[in-house]
Structures are given as structure tokens and as C-alpha cells.
Length: 151
Image (cartoon, rainbow, N blue to C red; front, side, top):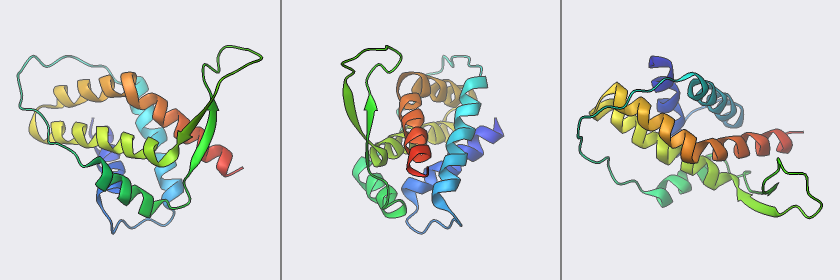
């Protein structure tokens, strides 16, 4: 799981390190997100029954400000709700690429904290749970936004 931890550690920097260095931040974040998605699709989890203290409280607004500094060109996008259903009156929704990345980073900070303060089993279980219930949609939406933005 050291590959997953390395990916998480680097992605987290995009929302916590104001002085982050990268030759091409957009390309790097795309590659990192694809790596995280790959790790999610192959991860096997086992629940850790140990009771641990709760993770740190996170400053969403502070992280969002750092993400915005790193990606000032990111913006809003449209998407279709329930795109798997072919329907003449599809419902258009508006997404926010900065929010997508900030939410991804925020949840991964918690997984990072668990790697460092609980157990690998607990961290991996929480990573899988967070991806399945929340982050996967943000990740897919953000990657689609970046793909279409660069076309």
C-alpha cells in the first residue's frame, strides 16, 4: 500500500502546501487522480475493529483557498444528472472543479491521518469507504472536466 500512501501524500499537498512546486500542476493532478482511482479499483479491505480517536478537524475554506491559488483557471462546469438514463428532458447540473478537488483532498487528509495515527487496515478501509460513498463522483467529474477543458 505504499503506492497508495505516496499518491495520497502528494495529492494532499495541493490543498495544504501554498509553496507547492510542480512543472505542470494540472497534468500532475490528473495523473495522481488516475493513480488514486486505479488503487481504489483494486483495493481489498478488512475492517479494523479497534476504537481509535477521531481524526483532526479540517479547514475546508483554507484548503479551498490553496487549491484556488494552485488552479486559478479551474471553474464551473455542467453535467447531466443520471447520464446513464437516455431521456429527452435530461436534468442539467452545475459542478465546481475547485470544490471537487478540495473535497478529494479533504477526505484524503483524513486517510493520510489514519495511515499515520491508526493502522494501515483502518486507513485503507476508510479510503475505500470514502471513495465508494463520496469521492469517486468528485474524481470522475473532475477528470471529465479536465479532459473537456483541454480539448
